[in-house]
Image 1 (cartoon, helix red, strand yellow):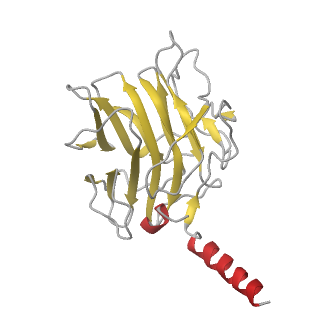
Image 2 (cartoon, rainbow, N blue to C red):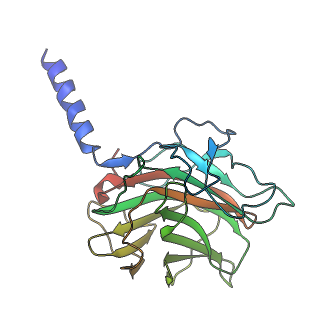
Length: 256
């Protein structure tokens, strides 16, 4: 009986410790080779497909493109979010971009009254442009448009990975470069009370939140709440993205 009570108590503690992880395991139902997108948003006012990966609404998606497929598992020290990733890149001959969105909320609801974190892993072997281009976004619509905070990437002059924080018309390029072919932890932080967007790349996952690699005061963009997150696939990319976790506490990024 004592063992049973202890087991129940420990289980309760585990549930409580994970209570603030708003979205986790968003790729857990997939296996390698599966298509990611379950539906397509063809209009910004399409009904929400909650907790579902969809082709985001775009005015001009890449002609001939289709849903990205599920790829290998990525990992990063102390980051607990497991599961498969998504393959990035288009077949030869297809040019342009296609966004995939994960809708977070019921219709009419939004995340805008606190601090929110979107964490994910990327492993890029190629970014075929020197021009910063969107890769990840927090979106104000459930259809994956109207970005509030974004991560742009490009190839530096010396062939390294460059990462830039973007909020509306404001940009802050992280001064150091990163390696291609290596898994990186990306964390976007939308601080609505202080209207500030912070970006962390490969942070130390200790108990306390470290200093961000880039910070942007964004009073014009962080006025509308988050309803989805998305990533951009395209002919310039080759690699993987995955292990998404959406939370409102730094501690829950490392929670099991």
